[in-house]
Image 1: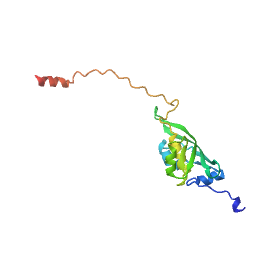
Image 2: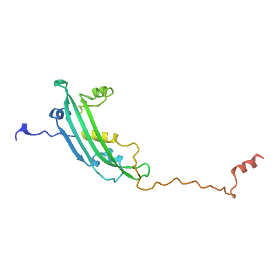
Image 3: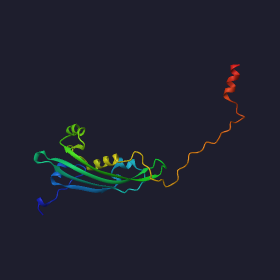
Image 4: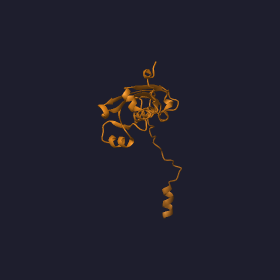
Length: 181
């Protein structure tokens, strides 16, 4: 095997998106949810770890020097969240399927992101795919996680029992009336 035959290895924690796009490369992994601290914190402690499955594929769009690197990111995870009706754990599937366009630097990304439909990110500093996966999965969290049908019947609101006033307890207003006389 010669050096030319050796496939490059890509570091997902500090990805050279332009080189990956030029190579038409892709990366993927199955990670434990524990590897993603913010995602782990969003779930119910002790919930099942179904893992985070992600895949990123890069390509160049355009011709010659005007070619622009794009990244297609797909990710799946199942997170145990708290159902807001019954307060029990609910297994919540999260899915991400997004395209990102990359530009030279943060200033350009910030300027172009407002006016473009796609998400624009900077090539430098080199992005972390795992941080991007975590950000996108956090944005995919439901605002109000709930079971479609809660496993246990929900408690009905307590009907207010008619409260009979206690006869032996004097009214505070009666004491005020005596003072007024």
